[in-house]
Length: 158
Length: 430
Image (tube, rainbow over all chains, first blue to last red; front, top):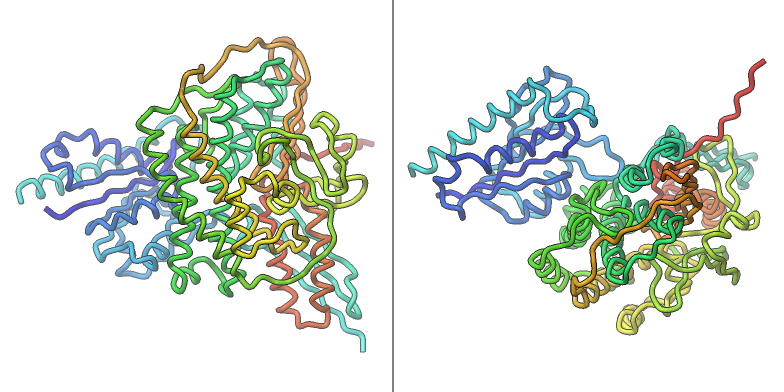
């Protein structure tokens, strides 16, 4: 079985929780239990630079999940392949590393394989005081959970 | 022929927060130089008023995503002083360990992602990563280890929530301590190589006299306690801080400037190391000396070496604390709320962080004053810019002056968001 690394980036601040939510649902999924534990690694990172250190594990298949804000309808699910397409996802942060920089640096450090997929969950303005996800973001996250569970089922048959 | 040069950097890159620089030069003389901080005031001191003392630590942690532990440690020291509460020795050591994590995380970030590109000749860490992947990888590992330590006690590395008046909400598990010890042992060679690497950098050679200020302690390298000491020989208690250090407003900054007896001064790693070099363990001093480090230093660009030595020290100190930790004393002691005034002074990664709180008999905050390192360093940064640019030569071309000026500012690792808590508003109605 091909090893899979799923990294959710997020926080408890409103819809920024999306990446963690998906990871927590996957860890609790019964479909995950059908797979050998050594084959899949699901981890949460609270900022992109932490994801960078997790990427050092160099799994052959890597999925990054993060809330993104591109101005499109909240709840939209983006599926991107950062190493195959030129994607402008640079951070506006002046101090920390954004996701775009994280992927570029991980690539420079030789941490990435060709099979890197970024799932971006489109969110609106983040309200840090909001308790839990907005309904449309929760629905998008659940769609992503189902997509991963289908991958798990396929892997279990191999 | 009259030469006029107006240099404007509208948005400083690779610093935290929003600031700008404006320099006017005429006939090779600086006519105007302003580090302009235009980040909006964040009013934390006012937000705390009438809130319970229990809310202070989690609130002040939100001041900074890079150095939240520092804000928590200065605040908890002040509140516990007001309550006449003395934490047990083990809590004191665990707080020191918590602080080691933050220094490693903050210094690791600054050295490798913000400062190193300046000294290796790259525009950004991204560009640098292609040619010096090993340097960046080392930095990220050390930074991440610092984050792990903060998360062990704070439940998360950004804006941690594990510290409280009296100690911590939760003790670390034996397995978490064992894992951390192993990680620190693995990281020690990396930290040592960081010192060697920093000492080998071709740093600009500008030596100027300046005053520096840091905590000093009779037995340890200062983090959580000590006297406030200066290179001029002054040594005062934290309660006496405001009799010597005065904050004033300037039109070009939303952060207050601070002066010691009317003059700019430096806080931060270089100030700390200059005043406390002999408090480092002998094996670290010997290692630094073999790498060619000489302290005290009056070259501000040696700050990166000071940070590297502190990363090594934090690795070493964290291991020492974990080896000594027995977990026999309560992780959080009981205390009694009472009215009072408390002061806190600890060493944030960027330097001295001073707090003062007035508390009423119900434990509500009636007044708060927070003086962060970056606001203390503002006047010193402007002074350094004048000294360094004059030494460099104001007849140089504009791009070279601009590049050096930005390098000087970044060398202080300014945290502009931290510095803008307060706005003294005078409203006049007619």
